[in-house]
Structure formats: structure tokens, C-alpha cells
Length: 313
Ligand code: SF4
Image (cartoon, rainbow, N blue to C red):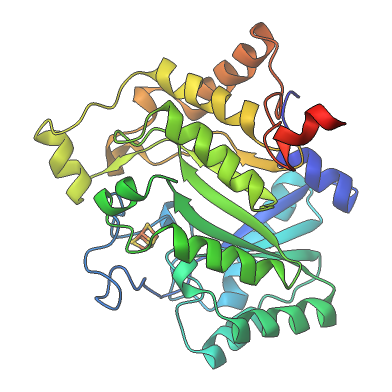
């Protein structure tokens, strides 16, 4: 591949194919419940990212058991990552967080991935995760929503945090040696290619280890859906997304693992999703454009470590 894929990375690290097991907690987000903001990010639907998950009222252990049973049999899988995916999975008391994380112990589990917001990272939680990771031999990855590097766009989409909180969270997490995966939406209508390139450079300069790229899907009954229906922005074209993904890959450090190139959502939940085509067609298109244009991840990763001093080498 012309970029560092997640599946290859996992295979190299664990010696076999590894499957992510989603766990859906009955929680919310400080940007939805009034603590930081109300109503959430303008694209966030009532079910968050839970459309593929088991009901949140099922105990954690039971969700893990059912999912491992199903995926294990279907794919003959033996190694798993427990993925706390939906809403803000560190937005709870430390005691509650400890209880939930401890429940993720299960045969075959090699890592715990925790999705959260940059303003919900605190040393006491990370310290516990470090102890948990050392006791159980599990790796830890914190998945942090960034979405855009453009702080004006962050305001527009009502993220409820700025770049400062993101940088603070990354620096804190790095002290514990965990992987960090940053989520980015490449085609926010208020961002252009300059923002996309800057985002790749920003992520690379912070030493983040993984990224997950998404296209913007417009979920029904969200503020974003209302804006879309009022014609307040244009979603651009499918080719625009492909171009942005390619620019991002070119500027991204070659060491960073790309978990995915495009997201997916259920058609019946959205008014716009992946330009009306399937996610894998867009992914295939990005892959073939990388071939045609002879581009590899990190081709333009030449901007750090005192670049201007190279003339004295
Ligand atoms: S931070 Fe995540 S869960 Fe919270 S409102 Fe935004 S998208 Fe939704």
C-alpha cells in the first residue's frame, strides 16, 4: 500500500489479524449536556456513533462476550481490541471509569481503545490506565476528536474546544506512552485544502501515532441537517474529497498509521453521506489515484527538525 494501513500495523504488531470490538456505554458528552456546551457538535446525532453497536444498557462484559462470540466465529478471530466508541468515554467519575475499564478483561484482548474529547483528559485517569495496561499486558490508545485544525471552523461546528485543549491533551497522553489516534473530517465545508495540509502537518508535528479520516455525513435532525436543507453550504464533489485525502496523505508523517480513509453511516440516518456512493468505492478511488499520481504517504513530510538549516548539512 502507498500508506500505512491499520490492518498491516496490527498484523505486524500482534502477529495476526485483530478485530475491534465496540462497546457502547450509557453516557453522554460535556458538549451535549450543558457542562461545556449544549446540543453538541452540529453534526452529532442522538445516537452518536452507536449505529453498529449493541444497546448501551447491556453490561460491558456481556457486550464484549456477545461481540467476541459473533466476530470470533464469523472470522475465526482470536485477537481483539476493545473499543469504547460512542460519545465521550472518559466523561464520568474516576471510580466509574476504573470499573468500566476493568470489565474489558477477556481472553484474546490485546488492547483497549478509548474514544473521547480533548477536554476530558486528566492525569488521574491516564495514571490508572497505565497501571491497568501494565497489569494486564494490554496496549492503550486514546482516540481524540479534532475534526479540523482551523479554529474558526471549530467554533462554527460548535466543538466546544479549541486547538489549545487538543494540544494539552496530546502532550499529557504522550507522557504515558499510549498511542493517540486523531479523528479528522476532511471535507468540512468551511475548510479548504490549506486547512487539510495544515492538519496533516499539525498531527505529524505533535507525534500522534494514528489518524482516522472521515467524510462529513449529515445526520437527520441535527443543526447541520437544517443548515444543509437551507442551502447554507455546498458539500462539494466526491473528487474534492479524494483530492483532500491525497493531500493529507502526502504531508502526513510516514510513521503514522491511517486507521481509515473514510467513515460510514447508515443511509436511513442521514440526509447526505459519502456523496451517495459506498465508502469502499471512495476508498478504492483514493487508492487508485495514489497509484496513478505515484504518491506515497509522507512524500511531502519535509517540514520539521529545523528544515531551514538543511543548507548547512
Ligand atoms: S464531542 Fe463527540 S459526542 Fe460530543 S457532541 Fe461532539 S461529536 Fe457528539
